Length: 118
Image (cartoon, rainbow, N blue to C red; front, top):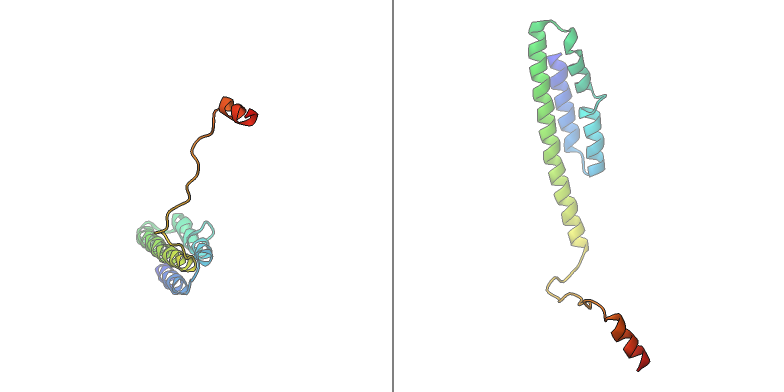
């Protein structure tokens, strides 16, 4: 069981390195950390293991899960920064130019009527 966890961790990390978009990252999260993932199956099968093995496998499974979650979080930050930089490159806005001045408020209805009459 411990060997399976290590293989799962290595496969997940190798696949994580090849991800280049947020969409792919989300599908990776579902595959490795979702409800029907292999890691979740291992955690659910802990009840059938003997006590000594249960402690070792449970501890290692939680370590692998937290490591994968941290890796997911870091990769997500990197991808968001890359997307933000790419979108900023495409936009050419001169922030030193003055903004548009919009009129504040409206004329009083009586004043409007007086202007219409005159």
